Image 1 (cartoon, rainbow, N blue to C red):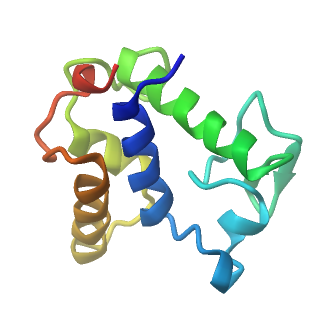
Image 2: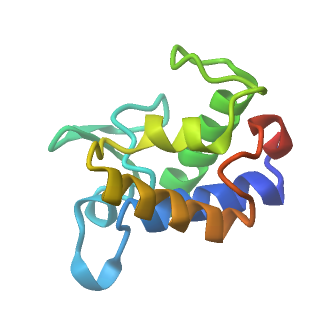
Length: 123
C-alpha cells in the first residue's frame, strides 16, 4: 500500500515532530510520530493529539495521512502539484522562520528530496 518514498517522508516528519523515546515526548507517549490531531485509526485524542494503540499503528496512520495529502484527498488544499515545502507548512505549527526552516531541513534530509519536489513524486 505504501512505498519507500512515503515511508522516508514519514520518517522525516517523525524526526521533525520530536518523536524521541529517550525524552518521553508527547508524540512518543501517544504512539503518534506525526503529531496528527485526528485520524480514523486513533483510539482517541489526548492532550490535543490523536493517540494510537502502538507505534506501528501510529506510523501507518502517518503514512496514510501523507499519501492522502499527496494525492489531494484532504481539505488542506494540497495535491500532487503542491511541493514538499507546502506540506511542511501544513504539518508544522511553527511560524518562526528559523524553526520552520529547521523542520524543512529535517524533512528534506530524511526524505532525500528538496523542498521544491512536487508531492506527486511520493505517490
